[in-house]
Length: 377
Image (cartoon, rainbow, N blue to C red; front, top):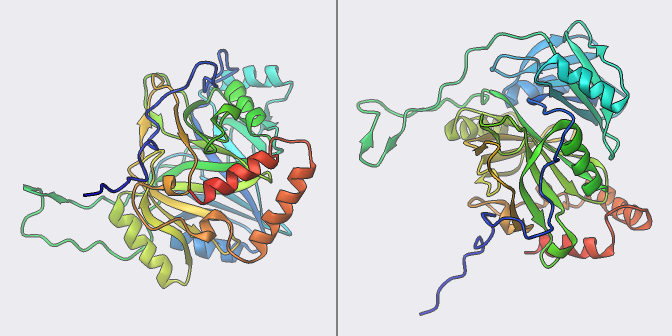
């Protein structure tokens, strides 16, 4: 009798760092940001963007000829800001400071100014640029929108533990109520420099490192990074960075109530003619139940539920980066999700590979071989 090989063996990254490997945190960061505040985009068609946003589960709170603000049901600032522009592009993330004093400290350390935000948002910001060229805002004292009525999770029966009796289960096929912004994933040609910049300036800490199979000696190529709130648990990752041939947005993720909200919301998106990229499944790093979609401008966005929460005591895990290691269960990762579907996107990535190999950055020929190996592992 032969035993089946489990492809997830060794991929859950419970193993820690070896001597001399990256510690996953800065020894004396400038500040420790509290959370993501919002993401900013430019898009040419705000009407189209707003239609998708409603189907995905956002609520519009500001709509002008040139600006669209989208909010979640949790209290706080809008979580997505879209301004009209000649082409679609990601501008950058905004992180929320623990208090205004941290903004003053950050401004002094980076030789930047604390400047007011527009009245529609309120508060102040310090605007920085990370080594990959993305604008990074750290904000404080913004207007607080009150909570909206949230989509309630379903009452579930677990084996003999029956919480629902004489009642049926009928989750409505409607937009999944987006509760909050969870994380953003960025690709960079300067992975290590960019990683260290975020750890030093914003006080983020690494939850998990991934490395190319057979290249652990060269260091990690992806990191899942969380906010350091001390003993208060935070999302497994608020930011993820991955080495690649171009500096670009990869995806952003938004929490919903539960699996039923995610699945029924996905059926609603399909009914409206939108395209699923990959899902439904459960990740390994972060453990989230996930479902990925392409918006009309080609941006990848994720519904997620049931993610991991870590406090400051956990050290980074280490695991190889493989395609099969992206999920514990679910369908195989699609070509669309991986960015290799035939079309403009894959041609753009191919041109980026050629350009990166000719430039002075961390994406060299050996890293390209590692990426290709990871894609077939």
